[in-house]
Image (tube, rainbow, N blue to C red; front, side, top):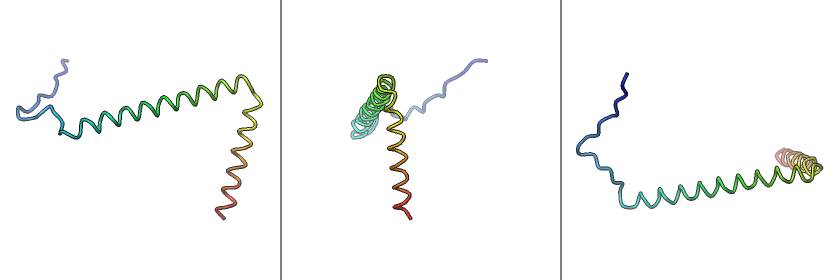
Length: 75
C-alpha cells in the first residue's frame, strides 16, 4: 500500500514568527551541551571505575551516608 503525505493547506505558512526561530535554536544548543556534559560525566566515571575500582565503593558509601542524613533531617 502506498503511503501518502498529508497535503498542506495553501494558506499555511512555513515560516515561524520572528522571535520563535532564535529561541528554538538556543534551546537545541543548550540541550546538546547538556547531552555532551552528561556523556562526558558518564565516560569519566567509567574510566575512574576501571582505573580505581575501590573508588566505586567509596562513592556508594558516600551516597548512602548522604541519603541517611537526608532522611534523618526530614523527620
